[in-house]
Amino acid sequence: GVPSLSSGINAEYGEFNSKELMKLTSRAYPPEGKASKGGPAAAEREIDLSRVDIRVGKIVEIGPHPDADSLYVEQIDVGEEAPRTVISGLRHIVAEEKLRDALVAVVCNLKPANMRGIKSQGMLLCASDKDHKTVEVLRVPEGCKPGERITGESFTEAPDAQ
Image 1 (cartoon, helix red, strand yellow):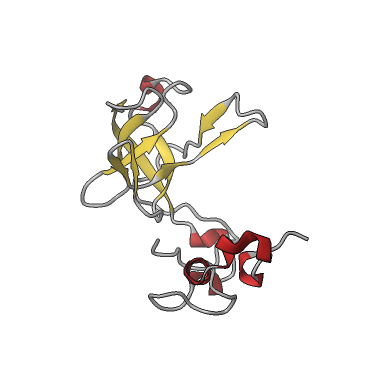
Image 2: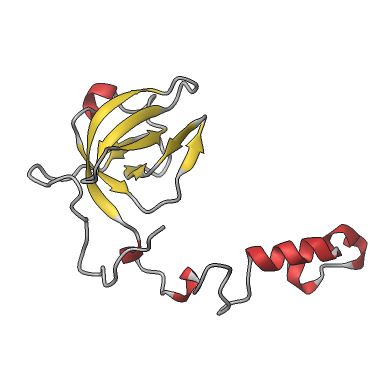
């Protein structure tokens, strides 16, 4: 089998046996059932789609990212006080006009991430064919309101905070 860092690997890979690396590895990948710093481990919850906070969003503004040819910067109303900034890699795939004012599905409980200098506070859900040559933004039915949670019969829990 493939050796793991936690098993000490092999003497010939001495740098992987260092105390510092083993300590970092144990923090990043705590043994099952143990919580990492900050309370009970999210991994204690069963993997379940209901943990993902998917909400209806309305794209109220969209434009090209100033520092990336393939990215859009969108302002999406997800029913909060102010629209969220979301960066998506759809610029060469979907025309700006098709996205403006569209009702879309947005993942809202992702950790914010810097995308070429702009913080993205969510992710548009899309579907693609096997080769990723055709990509479609998931749209929600007319009449849905920004901020409504998208659920299904199998959604049994409240979403994770992040």
